[in-house]
Length: 157
Image (cartoon, rainbow, N blue to C red; front, side, top):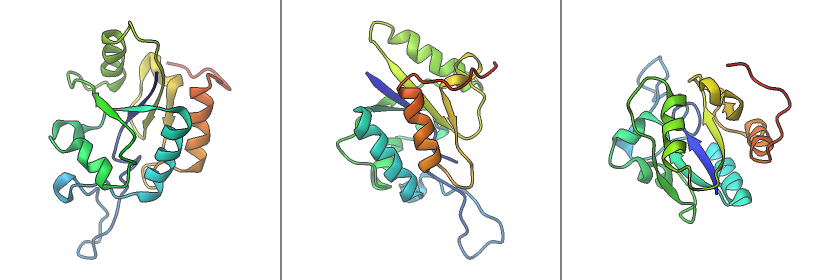
């Protein structure tokens, strides 16, 4: 099974201006959708190409509408969001590793899409997006390499 561990802010939800403030901000679930439609289109393409399912690692996972925010933002409704990681530490890599350990009976191939967090031992599986741009063609190609298990270089922990 191919899994995409997905952060929202900086990946499919990018900084924006609202015309009222001089400072950009991330919109949050109050509008019930992520805001970077192009990033969602690249995510759709990746999920369809690899028949991948999504596990949410974003802080948005704390809200009941965390799945709805992706679908309302343009995620193809045929792409399954199978759940979220537990929030028990400030280290996402540990939360992802726990999810993987809890599903060790399943053959899992995965990539992590995140703009900020260091993933510790899982760092080589992470595609680091640019917070202001989100997930685009460049990151899509990196994600494909990881899902194909082609590591151009080993990332240090």
